[in-house]
Length: 373
Image (tube, rainbow, N blue to C red; front, side, top):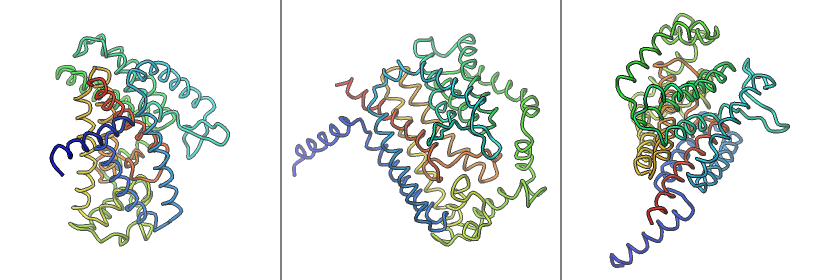
């Protein structure tokens, strides 16, 4: 086959994927991560086929959601986002009034057979509303613009933190902050914001729940309560450390299989990967996650307008923050806040939100290419 024929076939393939608004590179990386996640979950779940099949179904639903979101052009998101954001805030107020209470938290709204967390909507709505607000403003943002941006962001963050769901509140705050960072926030303003955050820590500490305070204290001294608040992180670090360089082997982890490691299929699944695949396996997993981040940032840089660039960049950085916080808390670097490892941990709601974000990324990229043509 000559070079011209190969070029034509390559062009036809690109045209097909662009027609269905799928970025093949990003989809390939996501698919590999899903497959790796299923391998780890099968071991973490003690080889439970029912749990594995349930996760496969959820991944399938999440892929469909991604495909649907990829079909919507960025200008449609621009038109709808104010309504979605206001609706999300209203739902958060509704949770505070009539929300379902489970495990000591009031985070869910029940619609008959369906129960969902409105806070998941805000993971996307918060950065989108800031991208919408900043798209026609002079950048980097002035103090006035920054004030209004923070005001829009603080309402959903406080409502989610009140549920209490500190992990999701941090993610929403980080997602919004990433938009401001991508908007060219100057180092002077970053230094001021950092100072204000540090100065507000005593106030934040006062409003934390007792169990949240224990998590922070446990971060610095987990051995003070080894069978209580420190148990999770102690067992997690034992699991990761025992993996050594190459791990104990797939299905051979003892911490999870002997039930020493709590939440080994959800929040602490990275500890299972560290134990069974060792340092090298953990590095490979992190490299795969960073490759997805790299592709997302590339799509952001290629976006054709400010709204799309800020939106794609914030979604990518939010994904990075998700796995960075999860791995950090499992490793004892950050307090335990209950954030799953994206597309690896067992669960459904967070997975759908993440894949919806990837769908928006693909929309930004493929619709840009259509505009260029």
